[in-house]
Length: 160
Image (tube, rainbow, N blue to C red; front, side, top):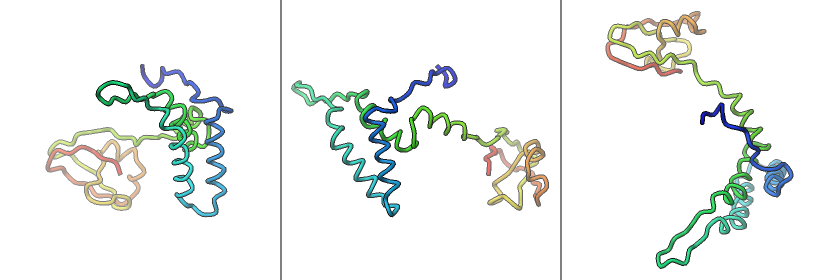
C-alpha cells in the first residue's frame, strides 16, 4: 500500500494519558530557565522506568526468551515521544511536517564524456557542484557568475 493510499489514523486520543503526559513534558521543557538537556533526560528516564518493563514478557522456557509487546511499547512510550517531538497530535504534526518537505529538483542526468556542465561561481561550494544545461537554464544561477566545463569522466549530478 502506498503512502497516498494509507488511511490516517490518530495515534492517540487528545485526552489520553499519553497525550496529557506529552503536554506536561512540553510545559516543563518550555518553562525551564535554560536550554538544559537534563530536563528532557530526566522526564524520559522517568517514563522508561515506569513503562518499559511491562512492554517485555519473559517466558518460562528452559532458554531465556523475551517477547516484546510492540503495541504496548508504541502506546506507552513511542506515542509520548512522537507527541512531544511534534508538539501536537502525531498524525496532525506529521501531515504538517510532510507539507514542508520540498525535495530538491534533480534531473538525475548521468553526464557522459564531453557533456557541458555549469558551475555557479557565486553559489557553488567547489568545482564538483555542477548542473546540466537544462537545469542551469531553469535555475536562478543563470544570472550569476558561472563557469562552463566539459566532463572528462562519467558523473551523476548532485545538488548544492
